[in-house]
Every structure is written in C-alpha cells, then in structure tokens.
Image (cartoon, rainbow, N blue to C red):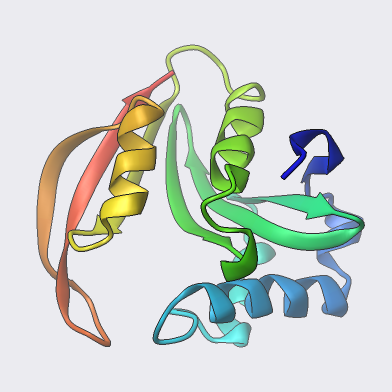
Length: 155
C-alpha cells in the first residue's frame, strides 16, 4: 500500500455530528474483530461526544479504513479503541495511524492501552512503537473471555 495515499485526521466537533461518520467508525470496528465490534453503535455515539474523548481516523480514497479512539485526562491518554479494516491490515495502516497521532502529542504524555493476550500481531506492533507491558487485567475481555495486557508509553 502506498502510504502517501493515506490521510490522517482528528475528528472535529462538526465531523462528530455526522451520523454517517459514526456509523462508518462502527462498521470498521465491527469488521475488524472476529466476534464483531466490542462496542455497540450507541456506545460509539455516546463516547464520541464526551468532552474528554478524541477520535482520529485514517482515510484512503476518502474512505475510513481505520480509527483510534482515546480518553484524555490531564497528561494521560487511554486508548479506548483501535481498528483497521481487515483488507487493510498487515499493510502498515495501524503503524501510520499511530505515528501520525504521536506527532500531535506533547512530550511527557503517558499513553495506556489494553490488548488481548492472544493478539500477538497487535502486541508486536505496540512494542515496536515503544509501548511496554506494565500489568495484566484478568478476564478483562468478553466474547471470548480473556486477559488483557496493560501497555504504557511515555512520549
């Protein structure tokens, strides 16, 4: 994939009000996970409008192919959701999404995320981006039930 054809964008308040955009984000999440989106569309709709939430999307040919959702509290950011369309996985889209997002962050910002212990490709990506394991959450995930590794990165 030609990364030059990818466009990264932080969602503005105006963009968040577009129902079609929220639906497309949900559709990316729903297709990216074997058991479907871990969140219902209503959860995305609710989360996207929280003042502490920020969403970033990556487009190719004006189509959303991936997104990153976060919750910001002071100098700490929790990554709440990351997904890339299955047809675009393993083509560095996730890496591009993170590296472009990193450029928007202040030095010293602490980033946290959870990842299924079985999601080895995601763990490998996160480690290559500088995240380190700082803990484990027992039975964090459902459908199927699974532990999560807690990862951290300081910008």
